[in-house]
Image (cartoon, rainbow, N blue to C red; front, side, top):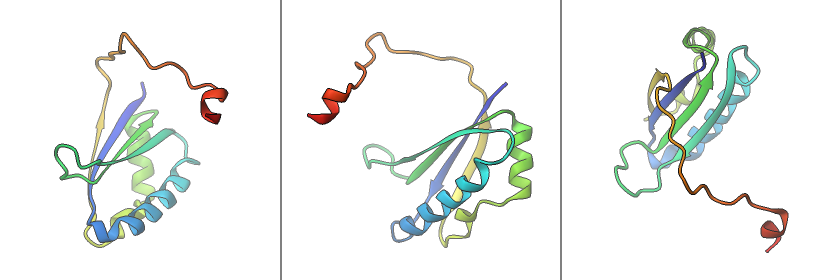
Length: 112
C-alpha cells in the first residue's frame, strides 16, 4: 500500500533559493529510485500559520521504500543553514472529493 511522506520545513527567507536548488537536486536522485512514485512541494502563502515555509508531499510505495532510500541518500536540503525538516510517513484513511470540482482547463481557455 502506498504511503505519503509529509515533510514540513522551516526555511529562513534568506535561504529560500538555496533550499529550492537542493530540494530539486534531491528529487532528481529520488525520482530514479525504486519505490518512489511522486512528490509535490508547496510554499506557504502567508495566510494562516506561517511557521513552515514549505511542505513536501511525496508518495512512496511503502514506508520501507522511503526509509531505505533515505538511509542511502541524505537529502541535501538539510545542509542549508537554518533549514529544519520534520518528515513523517502517513497512510490515507479517508478521501473526500468535492461535489463541485473545477471544470477542466481547455486549450482555448489557456490561450485567453
